[in-house]
Length: 182
Image (cartoon, rainbow, N blue to C red; front, side, top):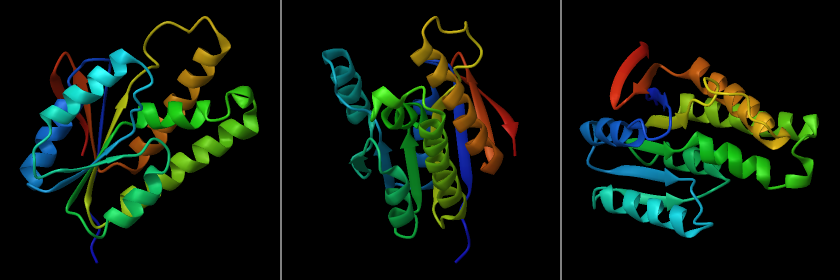
């Protein structure tokens, strides 16, 4: 079975990443497996999740999964034409904070990055077209607290892992996609 294409969409907060990813997915197929990593931990996040859910097409299947995204891609990659993962930013955060007391433990950080490498490999090899959305967090100020710095560093490395495998990369700037690979 031939492999699909891995498309990576990255940009700053509220830059139009998810909307652009959804447009690409809709052009490829009416039926999309939408993997959402967000967790409604507060009222504001619950509102964001609800808004995203309302924006999705009725023919799309949504899978709310904060951690085991690799396993879902592995299974759905042979069943579906398109998989949209929104987003690597939240998956990385969810993995990091699963054992918050170990945040600054380098072995724990490497374990997280190993999981991202496995996700990249499964996504790259999948017969489905896989679209991964993520935030670019390395272009701003250095976070003032250790957790923020560790998170920024891990997400930067996670983004690089996905970018290395991606067939196409789009950088979103103020709602405008800039193709930087492929």
